[in-house]
Length: 447
Image (cartoon, rainbow, N blue to C red; front, top):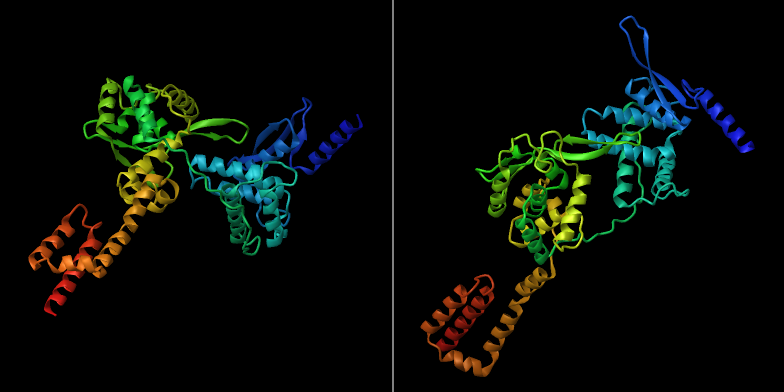
């Protein structure tokens, strides 16, 4: 009872310190903000409702930042208010999914540690210590962050500080934080046998949802790009496919999510891809009378299949095809590795995958198998055997006696054979040694 009374008193005090926040008779908390003004100057109020004071205050700060309420010259400005203003300033320059991801990172990791900190008191040493607490929280508010998440949080913190310095709220700062080391994860790839079983499974009874597997395996599409395909994106006469959009589910910031249809991940992700012949034949059979506006996977014009649902379908298809369970993105990994092993140049592969540059392709999607490594090692160091053979032929007395018996015409024939036999590159060392022995033979003949 005493604990409940103290909690009630604490909430009441918090409400007094808040800005236009109070507790209603029905037990909910209400916050209001100036949403706009009429031409006559009359205030139009906006209202926020929630079950807790903290929830209403958080949403109220966001709404006030969007409405331009905060005076950024105020000395009592908090980090939370500054961060919300910075985030709102990006809204028109980034995609909706990117904005939702930024908002999630800010409210999940940064604000629990820095929300109430006055902007005027920000210093490098304090922010660097705060980053260490964000990476590995002492109260176990979340799991310790990995390399990628920690780098993203540090980048966001630097951008907010840069924005504050641009507004002359603080001096420019350089934050140096030791981040967790990246762990190289070997992505699961489908073996050639598994690829063949998956192809046969799709070929036995092809449907658009099953063919989606081949769009990832043979065209390298992301799962969101597969879900965003319409029949109008396929040019079945020219045998090409144009990637115009992607489908993803994003957070709305209030515990709910929604599906959005937007442009592909990057500018270079909007691309045109040739379709393999066998896959093109299956697509022509399935096309029928489908209109250009028909979604490829859902086979209707109302809405596309979302990635969350299609992941479940992929899991079932892999089980039916007796292929081990892998993530849908493993199909894209397999496509990239298969293309490289078949001799596809990295620049072409980068364009097929929709990467901004070839370095991303090399670092992220190219995996060399043991067979390829063994072949390259044998190719590189096979010349040592040829060199040892040539040296023994030059200095071994019996072999030199044999060489002296060869005519000049016979030596020329052996030299030509050495160059053109099999691979010119692999036998170039042997050809050089043959020429060397020829010169030695002619020199000794003159002597």
